[in-house]
Image (cartoon, rainbow, N blue to C red; front, side):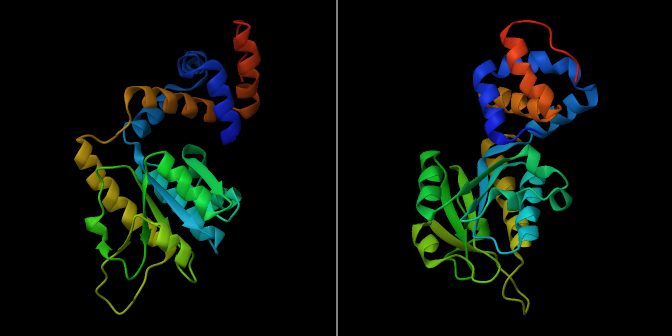
Length: 238
């Protein structure tokens, strides 16, 4: 499938409507229906991030939960985006969500706040409980790595810290489990707040559909689409 930069370039050059009109004949009815079903449950106002993930398999498992529950994106800080792209662990889920990597905490927090996302960090001593996290505004859930949790610098920059209440002898959960539990609760309440399964506005929905169509075809065909469609000529079948 196409990488994110290429997808965004084609989207900018052709526009969402033209991409969908051109590619629709080359997607099966089943694939088009699956795309629509997924988008009807997509929540753009919920993201997840991991600071310096230690185990790539755990980071990749987070991606699978993000996609399965309908969140918008997953990001890593001070780590390569490649840790999110394990085909075996994610079962291909990484193709269908936004992925990002940031070299520094400052860059990450600036990007999230610029997009209107408030960042809440998962911590055993968090002052908030999971069910007390605010979901009215867009939110990014930030997790530390499996060994030391969130760094002091990350904790200080978060809009708040939260904990998942536990009642057994265990004091913590695995990274991917913590993310999955948190996502389920936050997404459930976010959907209840907006009154529907997706918080995508009509234009956001159209753009996301175009991204999915681009990712659903052979990358070489998608790239060739740009030149051919610009000339308004016929597009060859992949």
